[in-house]
Length: 369
Image (cartoon, rainbow, N blue to C red; front, side, top):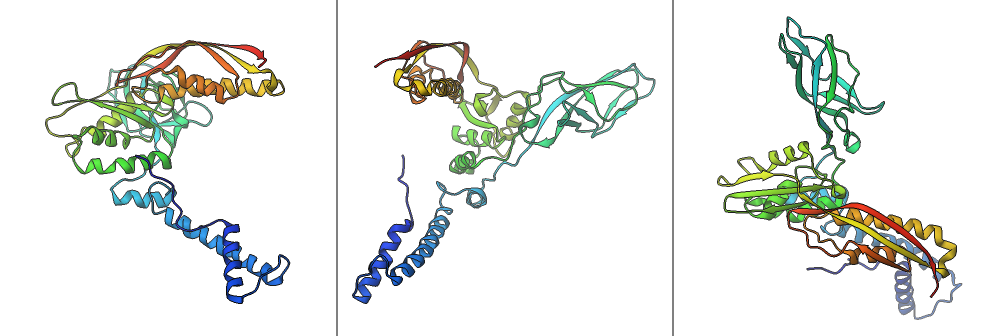
């Protein structure tokens, strides 16, 4: 169901000027010429009135979920018990290895830093004790800066010890760093506010499980919730741009949905990444001869539109592979036409996402007519 846009008051400056001048002419029983000093004065007053009306309209709209943003949206969220997800730092698991087994226990203190680059640092989350005779231990670490900047470092990439510890030879990440997110943006928060009434019950309904899942991380953009049989609930989240969640994000979701005050007593909840269905992309596109002067720009736009399609295709769970959308994107970017050899339409199951495999994009040149 959709609702139309509304305005609380008329804000168009020219309309307000016409209203003010018409009202004066009616009251004064005389017409005002365009150069009349009174008219010029009234027009200046009308501009002030129009500005005030704009503020009134803005104030009214900040009380409506559809238009509200920033701190105003935060206050609307409070009404239904929804809070904006703050920025969080990326995390990863680290393996600490000693140069050799020691006769006494070795303590590696909480806060010991390891760097991935000159600007990205991780710190160990707690003191870790490597017992006498042992040579290694595993501990979690958190990026020093909140946000997405600490995400995506593959195992072995965070390994430079910033704070040396006696007898420690290496500290290296064993999992890909993930889970870092910027402050939840207005659109994502707006969607969660709409879904918030679902959490007034425990997470029995699918929509309630989806709400609690999205509340676990601002990175989560879509969730599929299924129940293959009574008492079993499977949750499949995906992240921004269709990225599959890793172990850290899946752990955060489990912690969010598997608590006693969220999960019904009889539910067994499983959280996992969606399955993937691969498709190939092969096409040839053409540009109208009349657009020859913009050929380079159009080619660039077409290439971008294809990448946008690839992201769009994988950004929603269960979204069918749809070459019609690809054709639309290419035409909207300025191409005259496109011959799409692959993909063909294919249905995608409710717990899977479609990801691109091979890509072969050919520019067919300029065409006349």
